[in-house]
Length: 191
Image (tube, rainbow, N blue to C red; front, side, top):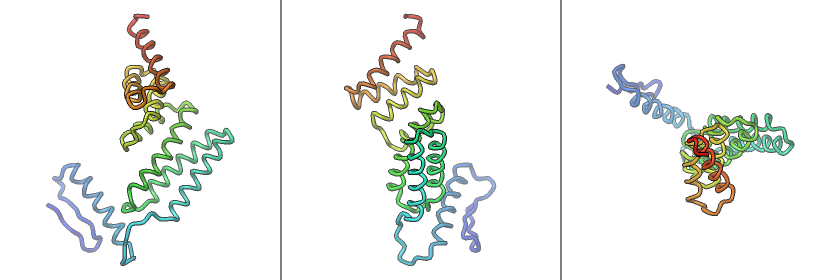
């Protein structure tokens, strides 16, 4: 049974509820709590310029560290910018803006992770980029390269082929695809 608490302005469910219902209700409560606290009567969701500047400055600081070849600090600052972006944004801010910002930061963080040999973290970020709709050859190239570095040739080859389906003339993708084929033959004992 669904209940509403007038003091806290939150909904709650009985103990017999399943995990999906509880998760959905928590999202509704989080959004409601944030909207109730909003005092502007002419409310129109706009990205907070203060939050945007704070995240942008942290990200740019990370990129400056990368230019100075200080990869660990650059990775730390870019990761902090991604976390700040996730925590500081209001739940009702326009998602298209947030998604564009997330794409840019994750692409750069992935490059830093690949350079610093943090391949599992890079794999996770690349999967997130794909799940967020960033289906471009560069993501498939980075993902295939990352999986090859992790010695997951069987997983790398299909991603490489997907990237080649978007850009059949991509030299780096063709080189990684050839490497995948050679390593597959080695795994099968045919080479």
